[in-house]
Length: 580
Image (cartoon, rainbow, N blue to C red):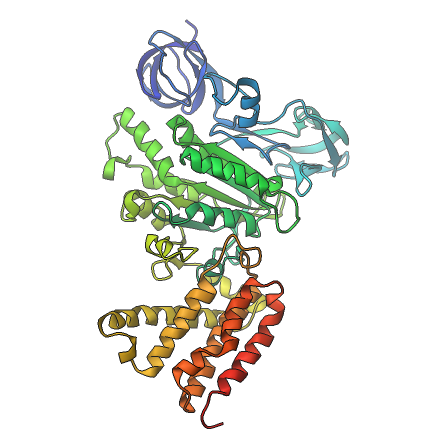
């Protein structure tokens, strides 16, 4: 038997042990008579332990195992956008076209269309010096995104020949003087981060248009965020809102171990979402990876790496990429299942001891960087966590919290009260404001950080007062504290609640968010003056202009009219004073 071929010795679910081959760690092999795809994850003497990315029922000892010599890699090139892949980059639409809705085992499909020809426009000339990461030409991949064809990392030299025209992605479009040929497609091993020159400080915000996120708990471009929350608290809608409205140019969505019906919903809704910036379908700048909970667990473990490698590829072109992983809990469960099959020592709650380091490895691949070509690009990673029973003291939530700098804690209680987005403003936090404040002062308003601090402290005071209110009722409080409760209610109902399905309210620009927050503080100041001048709290709170100001946010052109509404409110509050 050649060292490239071996036989199956033992099978335990997706974990197969083979003898008779001497592969390298993480090498891809073909297992059994059907040629199932697997990856070598352990080596013990002459035994190789393989995790198989497909169902292994019916496979038996003695069947062949064949080395491929390759590591698990993804194909990167024109055609990635608009695609829906499984965890190992097989295009689901192509598989459905050839075999119907049920995918048979051992099927191989190229991640990109090898035959389709793309219009390549060269941007370098013969004799130019190029090195890894340099852009040598462009392809208009979708109506909205220009694909920049790059020199693969580690390659450099003088351009000997280059031509524009129509080519498929494997054809040579450029050759260097040392004989190196460059095509539009490159391959990259998924477990290896793509190289860059340096990471920048996280000092530019990722604008999402969601008031509670942008204003109170902002995320920087190249930042990391975790969204833990129990079932039904709105994780998936929150991630769709981020995909649709954030000012990232490319979206990579990984449905990692989600329920099939939820994933179906995402897959059927995403193609119909319209990109608000271009008026074209959002899928034009999106790649999706769908790995539902009934698909093999080993492929779920790989899907997260596949997604982040694609994100890094677009980052290297100089784009800002938002990566949504929904949900990292299912990814951790896949690791736990494979770890128990390998008979490894279990850690807390049965998860492998290396859970935290794997999570850190994944989130560390985020960042705003200087690319090899000298451009700026970023990958912002937003990971949903689905803790069993909503208990965030479990290992995946805690491991995630130690790594990410933004925590958007979803609250089932708020969701039951129909307060959406159901993000708890008392338990959530962001560690980016200090780095982002100079940007806000320069681009939005000089007192932006101070306004945010005042809004936050009002919500904290309300929480303390609510405990007293539950004991003695709000009427027993002094008037100034009753006013504080009224102002905090305005923050909750007018500012923090946002309707994702409303044409106008679904998105708020940063300048509008600032103006709305200032309007709340103006109401507080004017009300304090009016009450000091003899007005009753009830009169001040019930002025018609305040209701107009709060309801107006659902109307077109609100950002233009808000100042006028604010002026009218101040006038009406002043009119309630007895000393007028």
